[in-house]
Image (cartoon, rainbow, N blue to C red; front, side, top):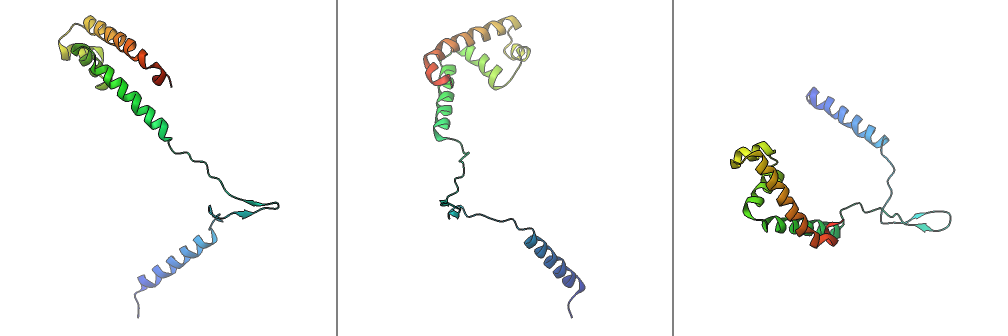
Length: 128
């Protein structure tokens, strides 16, 4: 009185369940100790998550870098942002700003030099 498709589906479903039951891997409780010959042993799983202090330090480094870039004179700040944030090459920066290629290179050199001097004040934080 039932459709053939329902019957075959049920057989396939039961076969899959039986197969998975046979393949079931042994499990170990993380909360309960397991018995050994000498004493109870508790499992200790290593925590591989990000350490909060490292996240805080990374955020602090980023904030220091942003502040140092914002403290640059505007023409240096613009060139640094175009080169390192917008990932433009020297020729693209030259065309975008209407400056000769040599001027772009010189401005980038000077901007990096100013940043280097400014960031040395924070070397104890940035060295890691």
